[in-house]
Figure (cartoon, rainbow, N blue to C red):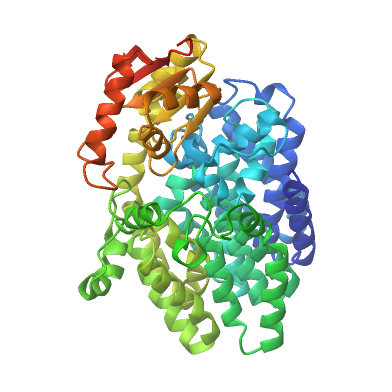
Length: 575
């Protein structure tokens, strides 16, 4: 499963050699390669021990990357350009590194982006999960992250992400230069605008898959413009291996190659060949290449129409509605939102909206084949999950084209506006994750996690103290990263299998728990069997409540610990 690391390194080496005369692209590629190599070399040294990270070491890491890039490209980069432009982008990157220093606490990191790599690393390779739904998503990012758990401190993978985002920013600069004939243009502004997008900062300092998705989409656009089909195929295969939405970008790239029919067909065939591993695995295991999505088309073993409908409704609740008026005002609302927590769950900024309009105008005049991406991607996004982070993979192309279309005085105004625009959501995120308090040492890891995960972390620690062997998590949100023991969890609907078990008699329930070696059950009663939320049929919730009360009365389940609405039950296996 560790084949991805040398594959990425070889890709960066080959592409850097090809684009030696293009300093931003070469800088991006060499920086990315250097990050991988640095992590490998420093993995067994004291730098990767617990509590090694501080503000000084952050600056050292940034210097290492800059020195590596300078050594490779110094003859090609003027002193003025390196000092003013590269250091300007590096300065914007500084908050990324500082904010990535806190322990992981974001939902997707705790449910699968970090919990799955941790599981695989602890077993020395891939192991099947107890039906964690997210384990059927493309696992390219998780596979790569699993390597870094062997290198020291448990939060090392999160520290990799700012480097990848930095590499993407330099890649955006390089992409902007590739699309330009004016070698004196201020290309660096595109990289700065990219890093000032609040949602890029939010997920560029966590461990979300967005960072590598942005990196490989940037590279794909560069190879596409350079008519390098082999590079485009490799990057597209990586996109497919990172996230289902990568498939949409592949289709749009394929459509943009339609004028060259044979090249487009070759691209799609070879991309399908190299990027199909996780989809073939799903076909073998579930009969559905994009499980658990598209259930109405492909079905899927272990899934059903009710959960498929419920999952779809959950995803559709993000963003605006789906009426004609909602679609009409959608671009405006996407441009002005600053809310990172609800609604679109992200912020793009009005500057990016203006740059997008400039990019569409330029593409219409000079590169009409790119309209498939510039218009097709946001249109498809608007009909799917309307979260800002899912909109971002086409932004590198938007910036590359839009910055080339606008004059410097307009770009300076947009850059200034972006700085002011990003301040509020950045401050909100900084305070929300208690960055200053944690960096200053005022709170420990345990105190930080108890505050950020009050319904999970304290009881997980209590489970460790009680030497729990295997626990069934019911409505615990799937946050398993900080639970180093055997467990069962329902990732999407947090009590599905436990509610199914409650439909049987008490003897069958006890035998099932005994056979599966569950000695404890941890339940969040804030969501468990309330407001008829288990009513897949009329009266089902009330019937399950009676069965659960019977388990308590018969002392099959015994409450042993409570923290707010969270109760830990011990299973009486001696009955």
